[in-house]
Image (cartoon, rainbow over all chains, first blue to last red; front, side, top):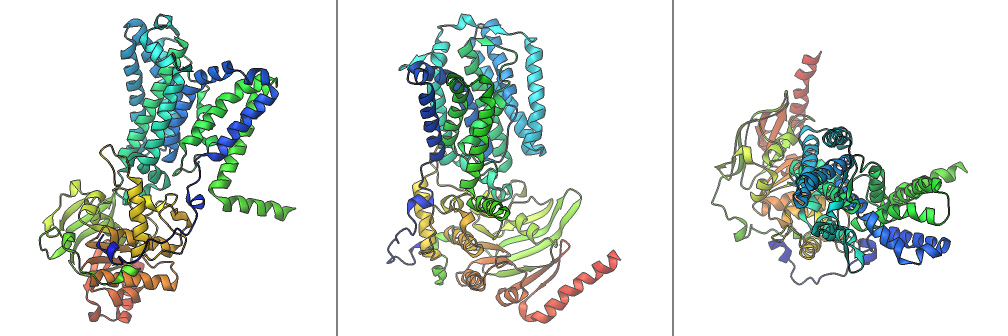
Amino acid sequence: MSGARANPARPPGPRSLPPVLTGGRLEGLPIILVFFALIGLFIAFAPRVFLRWPIYDSFLVTIPPLLILSLGLTLVIAAGEIDLSFPAVIQFSGFLFAFCSLHLAAPWLGLVAALAGGALVGFVNGVLVAMVGVPSIIITIGTSFFWSGVATVLCGGLSYALSDLENTPIANIFAGTLFFVPAEAWWALGIAVLAWFVLNRHRFGEHLLFIGDSQAVAGVLGINVMRERIKLFTLMGVIAGFASFLLTIQNLNYFATQGQGMLLSALAGVFIGGSSVFGGAATVVGTVFGALIIGMLDAGIVATGVAGFWVEVIVGLVFIVAVVLHIGIENPARLKQLRRRFAARE
Amino acid sequence: MTGQTSRQASPQSSPHRAYTNIVRAEKLSVSFGKVQALTDIDLAIGRNEIVGLIGDNGAGKSTLIKALTGVVRPSAGRLYVRDQPVDLGRYSVRRAHGFRFETVYQEKSLGEKQPLWRNFFAGRQIVNRLGFINVREQRRIANEILQSHLGFRGLGIDANSTVSNLSGGERQGIAIGRAMHFDADLIILDEPTTALAINEVRKVLDFVRWIKESGRAAIYIEHNLAHVHALADRLVVLDRGRIVADIRPHEMDLEELTRFLIALQQPAAGAAA
């Protein structure tokens, strides 16, 4: 640093660009606006539902497991990877929790088992991706089939009724109510805050961003790419294990098919939120609002009186528009190029 | 680059004992599966020596510097840093940074989408005990490097700028500024002038002179023979993973060197025929 003092007389110069242009912008602003616009629309079309608390209360129960999965996926996508095996973790970890609760009467052990089961699935994914070198989009299809199958074999296709857990401490802590808000929502909020700090302020998050940017660069900079990727997939497994536990304890029931149908919703939450499809850039705030939007559309569209059959059409449209807009924001040159191509055709 | 003012390595910059060679490879070999990329490399870099590394594409130049900086693990041989043996099994980029080795790559050393305050410190962040980054401190130092080492003021570049908005010369400047900040004793330049504008090339060449004047060492990979011939103390020629010449520039002028390099291609062409 001795060279830094070569010119001590030099005053620190003024910034040449206002902070607005240099990244001081509010994270996830476009998607936050979309979120409030959507609520406005719902209120306009179904005021009797959306001007009262109960619908929001039910959102705060149903959205958290999805949101927690999306938060984990945000880190995975930041590193330029993908994990398609988390629905299998929802099945597998849910079974472990249900089994421990019902047959061993040890729900807390069940929670530990659910997290450990998720860690195992994630660790195997990580080793196969980072050490063997199979692309994550391929290998997590395989591990997804495998662990989903294991869960089915273990539970024998049966569901487990866990109504004995009602009003136990574990149910109250994770699926009760605190300050008039469902406990699940507090847990999701806590994990979101943690995920933001890990991604934006922690060494591990920075390593993920550099790996997502370019593995070769990350290696040259001294980042242990293999170890960080194994850590990443293991963490994703633990997060999915927790989401599975939350889902099971809030329903007080384990279904052999639980988690199916969450794959696309959880991924959609991340991409609607504005994380880069290409890795190296991700936004936790965007993911929070993306998952809220995905979680609200279903009930919201039905409440406005549009036939339920239209739900997926609208979700699809929102997704496509959001992703195209985000690419435009991330890389304006690409959008300009597109516009020019259309202009030339006219 | 206003930091060109020649300065001797400050006292705290050399906590190590006196040494002859900053780095020395002995019978170093690297193989990727069945492909032998480097064979029995014997090479020593003096503590204040600029060594030009030349050779055709695929001759093993990049592999050699990757082995010396812990990116690639050698399959055989020995490595000495400041005359002390290094445990190759545990050698890594992190350790190379600890030895004050810095690499200036044009393409491969900066994260495109990341701001400069991350790029200056990636892999050795300023963190607290829990691993959280001190962003304010990293931003402050990054701005300091940009202003006092690189004279980037007024170009609209600050610690929050992302690499993808920078020109080739500016990127090179960032990598050079990083090497200066971490007070490297050995600076490895991998084709630093490729695809640069003329005034940017001049800045890079000034930087190589600064390395020499400030008592440091450099390994300088360069396709432009005129540049490397003019600046290097020694020229090492690699061909198909082996060192085929280790000379001083005055022993062979530019024209002879060019002819020598072309002649190296002939037996290969003959063998292929």
